[in-house]
Image (tube, rainbow, N blue to C red; front, top):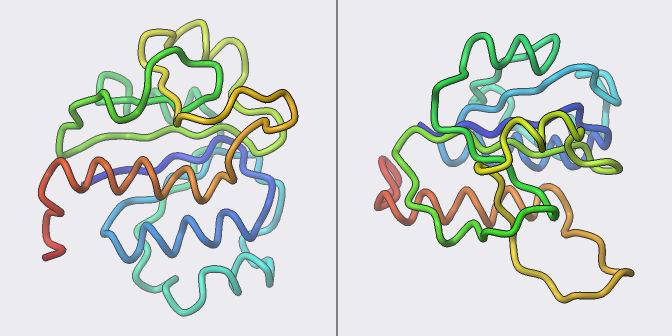
Length: 155
C-alpha cells in the first residue's frame, strides 16, 4: 500500500482531490494537523465526491506524532528544493510520500533532517512558476510508484 501524507494542508479542494485519488488507488491518506479547514468543509467533501466511504485515512496531531509511528519506513519527501527527481527512485510497494502545505511547503527542519530523501517533479526554470498544484503533484508521483509495482490490485 502507498501512503500519501499531507503536511498541514490548507486548501480543502486539494485535499478532497487527493482523498479521491487515494480512495481510487487503494492508498492511505495521512493528514498532519493543523489543517487549514474543517474535515466537514463543503468544498473538501465536494472535491472528494462520493469516495469518502472508500478512503482509508489517518489524522496525526503533528509531524512528530507521524514520525513516532512511521519513522524507519520508506519516506519520500516531495519538494521544489530537491536536487533529485521522483522518476529516478525505485519505489518499494509500501512507500510514504510526504507533501508540504500549499503556501509554504515543508519546514526547514524537515528539509535538514531528510535531505537525502527529498525529490522533485521537473518544471521549467522560471521564478514566476513556483510549483505544480498539490493534487496534481500527488497524482504524478503516486502513479509512477504504482506503475513501477505493476499497479497492484488495479488491473
